[in-house]
Image 1 (cartoon, rainbow, N blue to C red):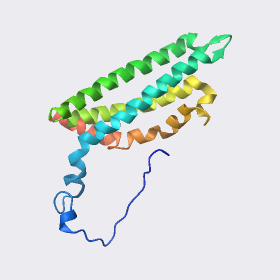
Image 2 (cartoon, one colour; image 1 turned 90 degrees about the vertical axis):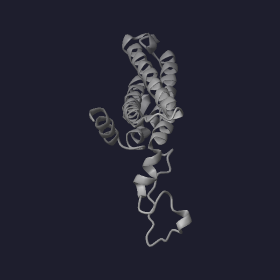
Image 3 (cartoon, rainbow, N blue to C red; image 1 turned 180 degrees about the horizontal axis):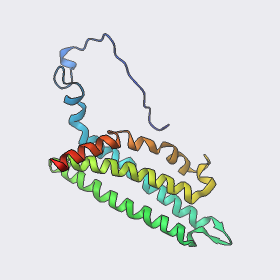
Image 4 (cartoon, rainbow, N blue to C red; image 1 turned 60 degrees about the vertical axis):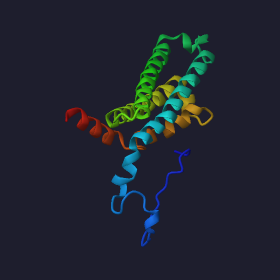
Length: 177
């Protein structure tokens, strides 16, 4: 996760002037951070979608150029299937994210939708990262190829904006109420 300056901040024995308190006194994370969770999950969706689309583009370019047995690997059915699966998943994810963004724009309660799309996108990022490396073969693990970085960094998708498990809990609770 070299693209994310993630770190821990610790404040001990700090006094916060009343005018600088976010939310209400004593509300902490529930009063402030959770109030923007739908926005956060929707905003995170953009880089996730961009990353998976970029990796699909890299794979398409690579498999047209890389030759095995005297022909581009794009001509092999197994590679074609990987490309088609990645593209289908990306299109489904776009619809999910566009729908949640529309709901937010229209002030419609969408905690279930943002939770569903967050854990779905996290799973999709991992799937695309794995497939991209598989298509690139041994080159996919070399730092000379951008898919290596995506593969290395993809884990953030299942943690940032609430873990996949938390998002599943939230969605299930709303679905089963």
